[in-house]
Amino acid sequence: MKTNKTSEDDSFLFQVEILVHAPTNGVAMERLLHALNAGEFADFRIQSGIQLGARIEQELSQTPLPEPPPADDLDSRIRGYINSNKLIRVNVNRGKGVKMSMPCRVVNYDPDKELLTLYHVDEKRVYSIRLNEVDDFVDG
Image (cartoon, rainbow, N blue to C red; front, side, top):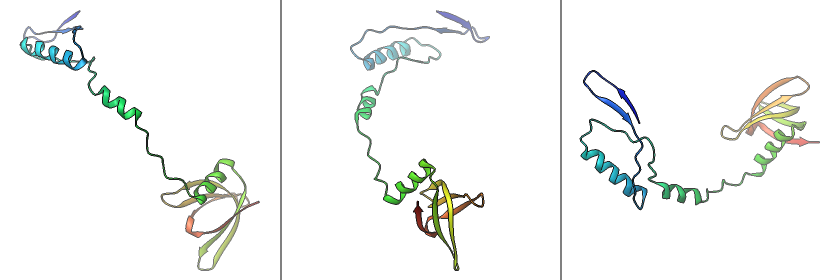
């Protein structure tokens, strides 16, 4: 047991551990709180030993998580290019008649923004291209 003088008004702070016999943690907590409230203490704080909600945690851990929706074929194909770091050719239609055929590697893919980041191996440049600008992926 520790004791520390905390202020000039003759108050003392004690740190104690209390063992309460009870059939459940909730009943033990109720008995402890009743005793502490009846003791007319200026203040108290319970820092550990509270096990309320353990059954809820157990139920949540046993509940299977919903499976993510299956990725479409294009998404998995693009992810495969990224993981394998494979050299591919991407045919791009930039609009207004501007077409490009780039030997490149897919660096990144953002499915939310439908944005591809491609590294052009001949020009040694990085391009960001919207997915709707891609005409075809040619892997050789």
